Length: 380
Ligand SMILES: NC(=O)c1ccc[n+]([C@@H]2O[C@H](COP(=O)([O-])OP(=O)(O)OC[C@H]3O[C@@H](n4cnc5c(N)ncnc54)[C@H](O)[C@@H]3O)[C@@H](O)[C@H]2O)c1
Image (cartoon, rainbow, N blue to C red):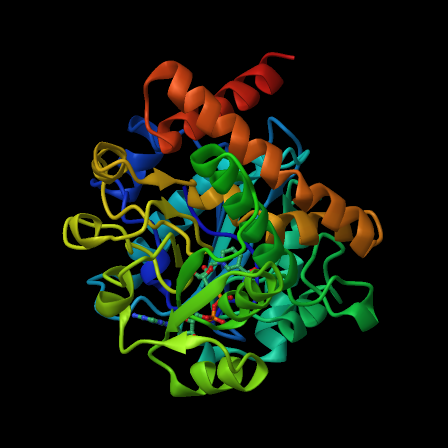
């Protein structure tokens, strides 16, 4: 469904394309995308802090999800856009955390403003005090516009802060297990599609080789796959080809998705990668990547299935990052978090099997499993 934790610098275009229409209050109180337990509006005029904290569900445990710092340029009322985004993102986190098998519900926060000009220690400390005032119902982490160093500051006021630096007892950059988890999801998709998780000789196209895409390429090369990439930032491409000279680079995503002989397409940049234009052009038979909200609008999951393309749901395969930060609450142990992220392989396979048994696309099967887990926990 939606995004998570991490020091992502991908822009907020990965805010959910499935965003419901109507006012924020309509969404919250009257739509199927609403039903959030609690929404907190925070203001600290001294530092300029304006923030929304949305707790969608605590059925499975304290709500966990990152803090987005964004200005919503172009929105008629940025505060309204932020509120809608927070509602949407928090709900997505409920699904992601449920599917990852975490004892956490979904929540998300948005700090409204341009982080380049507004972010200050004073503001982050004020934000930390608001999160702390919720007494652990919401646990925060990084998201677009916030970084490990920011969480170290927030943590000075709030013990329910993850995504901190290793020096402060944190797990550091969450892209490490995000990439590992996507790789597990890809192996599961290969088993389902080709009967083996061996990726030797398979061609994988990665769109976006930033933090996650770069590490994913490393896993694939180690597994014997051919890697083709594209990125709008030359710096990201150079860093990758410097580390892995055998990687092939193409001009843009349009070229990548049409690459002859492409087996797997891994969107690792922005949301909305799978849409009415790209799906008909895809040469790959599997889609499995880290980007959030890859399905541009409802119905794309069916278009993929109709073309015989196996889609590994984004929020399932990119949950390694939230698994990593959730582990921080127990005193971070990398091996323990990695073992849990390995479970993404089994979860992804389970989704494909259920999708086949019920005659629905994998994205629908994943939503059904997550909803059943939340309903069962709420009924206890
Ligand atoms: N980092 C995590 O732990 C994590 C966890 C879950 C989901 N995600 C999602 O995975 C995606 C990647 O995250 P990241 O942390 O690697 O971000 P990042 O900012 O480090 O990397 C994104 C890369 O995509 C490139 N890019 C942007 N637009 C592009 C385009 N149109 N075509 C090709 N490349 C383009 C950027 O130049 C950049 O190199 C994001 O959607 C993010 O929300 C990340």
